[in-house]
Length: 251
Ligand SMILES: [Zn+2]
Image 1 (tube, rainbow, N blue to C red):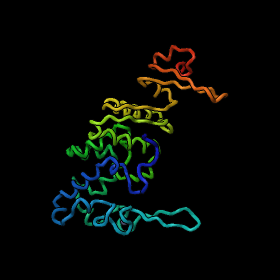
Image 2 (cartoon, rainbow, N blue to C red):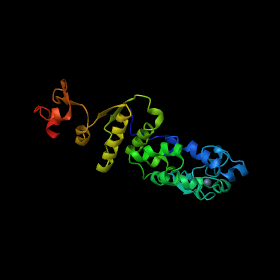
Image 3 (cartoon, rainbow, N blue to C red):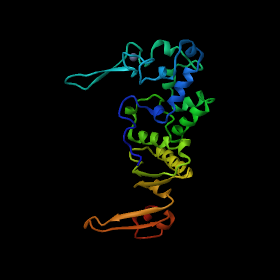
């Protein structure tokens, strides 16, 4: 069940950690010559543990001030200027970019920047495939909409470790709140899941989605009596010819 609920409870979770690309990015930075000289390990490039992160903001880049009678106020961390890491750690660069610069890139920008790093690319590419090329690698999950969070989850299933598994996916009205253009992206992602050998069941009213299905189960409820449920099923083009099917009429 891939819902539109947030991808993580804390403000620290973000797209790049969710698709498990961050481990390899941290390793990439720890492999740079300056890291070797200074003894930086992958953990120094984490904002979740002590070591390399800015301790004033605990790697968040900003501070939250609780106001007694008002909503919490967030202030940019003065120590790191919102860059989340200690100065020495930010001095380590890969192709002239620091760990913060990479987290601040959009998925699309990172695909070009990390082109030669095939292992990282393989994890980031699905995020672009589901139409999330515009979000930033280190963007806090709390800033993602329900539809975006759902597609981040979906992207994680398009990585190669799920290729050998056959999963039955259930989506409840996944097009809710999505722009027409995003619905097409979502459909591409569904098709990619099916091509990878998975099965996708979608509860949906959107006609574009219904029309693209391999098989439709058309449910109708006798609303007044609330007792009778009937259904018709078939390929969309078959339902089209059944006059008693409301869905068929719209197909
Ligand atoms: Zn800070």
